Amino acid sequence: MHTILSSASKTVRIGDDQPFAIIGERINPTGRKIFQLQLRNGDLSRVEIDVREQVDGGAMLLDVNMGAPLADETELMRKAIPLIQQLTDLPLVIDSSIIEVLEAGLAAYQGKALVNSVTAEDERLEAILPLVKRYDAAVIGLPNDEEEIPEEPARRLELTRKLIGVATEKYQIAIEDIVIDPLAMPVGADTLHPARTLETIAMIKAEFGVNMTFGASNVSFGMPDRHSIAAAFLPIAISHGLTSAIMDARSPQIVRAVKAADLVLNRDEWGANWIAAHRAQQAREKAEAAAQGQGST
Image 1 (cartoon, rainbow, N blue to C red):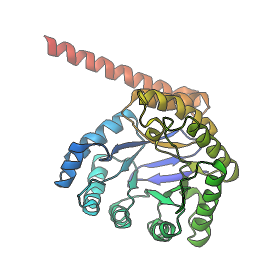
Image 2: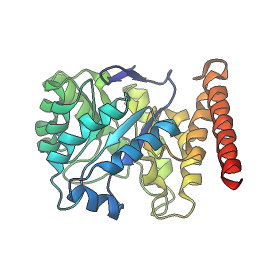
Image 3: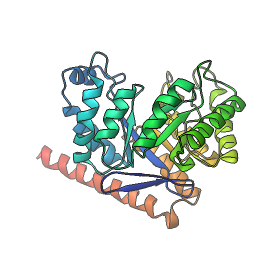
């Protein structure tokens, strides 16, 4: 099952027979005080740097979140989408909890976007799914509702069943346009959380075969050496059925881990992507060494 996303000129397929889809997480002001201040002032100059660093790191899609406190998030999203589409041809993920912001981003976007996100709450389903259908987008669905963010995989599967049922039956959204987030919770809060996520992934894959994603940084939240945790957990999750993640594409350690998973899971025919990435890294290191040599003379 392929979830097909596009910009005006580039298409990305997400599927368990495709290379793992790296969704760059960086265009997000959460935890970035300087970026928040810039956004409150209507300054999008930092976005260009974030786009370049993530593209250089190997991102295949970019998540775009303009949710800075006290900022005009709707207007920022309306401006950010065309700006980013001028900077890169990667498809975009439009990320907000506010309906008006999602609609502004979808209206400004050229291509088929991924909406991040909708929960299984009745009110959210009724507000967001019509937008997804109207703009022919795909959507990330989270299996939590008004009552809880469930810990048990069986309850997550039950809410996934509800979400997919409403989306496909009531709103006629194709099942391949639904990407489920199996809920990655911090290992620092409970070391059983990752096992629950893996079980959820396997159960959803077995029943629905849909594509899945999660925020990779959620798993390591509050722990030291977070990149090592993500680099260890992501290949395991991929082997269970995860097909994409919103992650730090600037981290060579994490990117190498998912590309190695592609290789050993036979999603990188003849190792072409692995070899190309290695050669590109060698070329970058050589160029950096040459630049440093020139600077020291």
